[in-house]
Image (cartoon, one colour):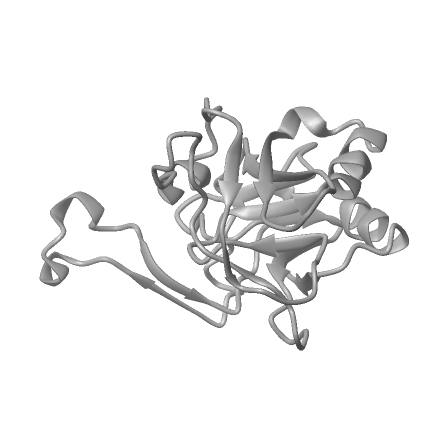
Amino acid sequence: MRYFELVDDMRIMDRWEFDSPLDKEGQEIWHGQFSRGTPLEVRTPASVPLYSPGRALDYTTTALGIPVVHARVKEVFERLQIQEQVQFFPTAIAGQSDSYFLVNVLQVVRCIDDARCEAVFYYTEEDEEPERVGEYRNVRGLRIDPSQVGDRHIFRPWGWQLAIIVSERVKESLDVAGITGARFRDV
C-alpha cells in the first residue's frame, strides 16, 4: 500500500482562501485541537470566513491548516467505510448553499522514517523549549514507514502533525470523484 500527504493545492488560480473558523458565538476555534488526533466537540454551527473570495473548492485548508471539505469528500469517506477515522463538523461559508465541513483526523501514528526523509530536525535544549526536546522541529521530504500504519486510511504522523496522510485507496477515490483543491505527495 502506498501513502500520500494530502495538501491544499495552492497552485489553483483564482481560488478562495479561508480565515480561521469561528464557533456560533463568533469566537475563533483554536486550530491546534484539530491536529491532536483526538475526538473534539465543536459548538456548531461553525462558520469559516473568506479571507479572499474566489473559486470554491472541495478541499481547502484554513489559514492555520484546518481542512474544510465539501459534502462530496465526506461521501467518499462514507463509501469507503472509513468515516470513523475522521470527524466532520458542519460549517457555513458565506455565499455557499452547499454543505461544507471542518475535518478532524482522529489517528496519530508514529511512522516517520527519519532515514528516508530528505532532512529531519529536532528540538534541542538550545531552543529554550525543554518540553519539546527530542520532538521534530522540521521535516523535509517526508517519508513514512508503511509497516507502522496498520489498517488506517487517514492519519497524522506523530511528531509532525501538520501533515495529513491518506492511503492510496483514499487518494484514488478522491481522484475518481473529481475532488477539487486536493493535491497528493508520495510519502
